[in-house]
Length: 109
Image 1: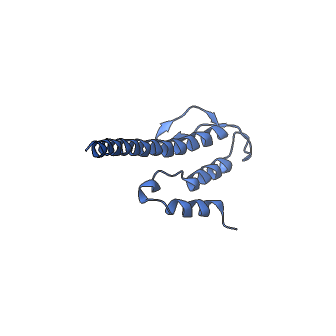
Image 2 (image 1 turned 45 degrees about the vertical axis):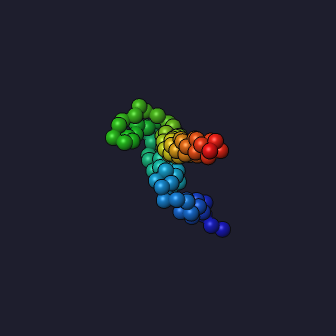
Image 3 (image 1 turned 120 degrees about the vertical axis):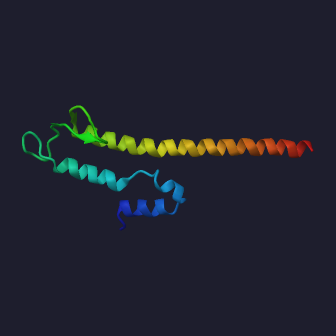
């Protein structure tokens, strides 16, 4: 059975290259989980959900739970994908409006 990440990568590769930079980065999220799980906590345990301070995009975030860090990364990935979809939707709406105007001129002629 093919791994989910490889299946996802193949599916993303089948789309237009413009979409490539806007897909959710599954491998990056997997690495985030791995880094979080490998970090020692205040008790020295790796499986504990103790609080930790972390850094992302050169800005220090307040002390947060490990699951919050992953949710932050996931939210950023989803936001990037959704914003691109909204941008494409706006372009399509504009194109549809232009076609509608041309159709009306054609019908009236």
